[in-house]
Image 1: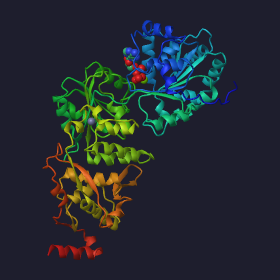
Image 2 (image 1 turned 135 degrees about the vertical axis):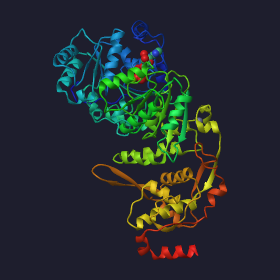
Image 3 (image 1 turned 90 degrees about the horizontal axis):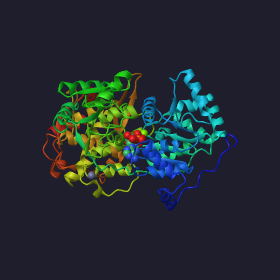
Image 4 (image 1 turned 45 degrees about the vertical axis):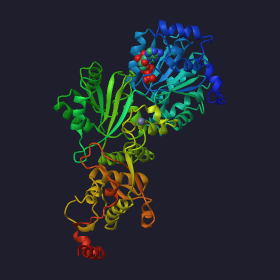
Length: 590
Ligand code: ADP
Ligand code: MG
Ligand code: ZN
């Protein structure tokens, strides 16, 4: 086979054919079963493992989508020890590589790795081992950079291929190939070279989370289009999903989190996810002040500190890790009883992944996200450069904002799964509370909010989301003297309406960039013009009583009868420029 020659992709397997790979009557079945016990010290396979192993042993390309901690690694490690030659494993992080090598050493499977910190001698011996017929190692772990950039490695792979010693490719965290995924890594894009150069070597892609479109994208990148994909059900029945509103007057919310940890999760391990490194430090300090043993974790800390925190947390010397998303891959603590998000995630996929670190032992665990108005816009500024970032973030906001949909159903829709709310088993706050919501007409509110935003626009000013809500609530600074309809809604409700208008497209984000930071404002969205028509109406589902809100429950009457008009401050400039407004203001005052 000459390098670069393409081979038609493997035909898709029918359901029946796929089924047949669950059997144990293959030529390798006995060896596979024996080594499962003798080497890996495991008594039986978990769901999908044997099927995946048989498919890979038959030379099929395969994608395996399975939640973290369910045992994806075995699906290439066991085939590796039952095959001639070695398996090339691509892993994004050196720490993951080291964990795996340590584990493999403990079970007696010879394995090596090549990464940026490998010494010359080590690299030389690894490269020599690749073309050694006696295969001194069964697994070779490399970073994607190595594959993309090391000519030496490629040359040796070529030789090994020709000698029949290149048994298999395993691409771990395969979702990193796709820009549409939650963790794109540019070097993964170059891995298509593997199947282009070595078309006969079966490839196994592994990930814990990927929507079907991300899977397709990754398969295209890796030159195995439409390959067989085994997907474990996304649903984690033991996880309880809940959304809590942040105290709107103190979006900090750490005290809410602290009291939760001290009461509901006393002596239990958990993670608090935060948005920034600074938040990791401050929230952790705040929790410590509340007597909780917590430590921060983020990318900017010393590796030795990070591994110490990880160890202490694993051994229950520390109760809580307050972490950015840097605390993720490679964590397989089974007894995490809670994952609290101090700030919403950037996307549902991220949220599923992060919250999914709870309850790996299949015992009940909680996933709670604290949802705050201003956080939405903090995240908006962070995802602004990502062309799908804003939509993904809106989906996450919709998850939090929803008052009528089972949380699991929102996640299921995201992963293109068929879902029946019964399957939630009351394991989310919405299913547990029942249908405690009303549909209200918010057309009038929408017009009021748009009035505020339009007014700013007419003055060539930008308004922050906070300014919009404050002004609408009549709580803005007294600089402006202007007639604006101040709402009778509570702050929680008012903010919910503004967010709803954003999600529907009546409002949209507007950004301004400085060399140091990005600011997010609100401006009229594409649907704003519709509100000019008298007959247009907008509705919204609202909770009857908002937990955590200090305000009285919403009654339909309250919501639709915001006719109180309050006198607001008017800007001097406005006095000069907008006579009409002034006149109208005077009229209404009289
Ligand atoms: P993943 O890559 O899917 O996150 P790992 O491969 O790291 O998961 O495996 C997670 C844990 O599950 C490991 O401790 C592993 O030993 C264990 N495991 C894997 N397969 C089995 C099995 N068939 N029975 C029991 N434990 C298993
Ligand atoms: Mg893994
Ligand atoms: Zn539910």
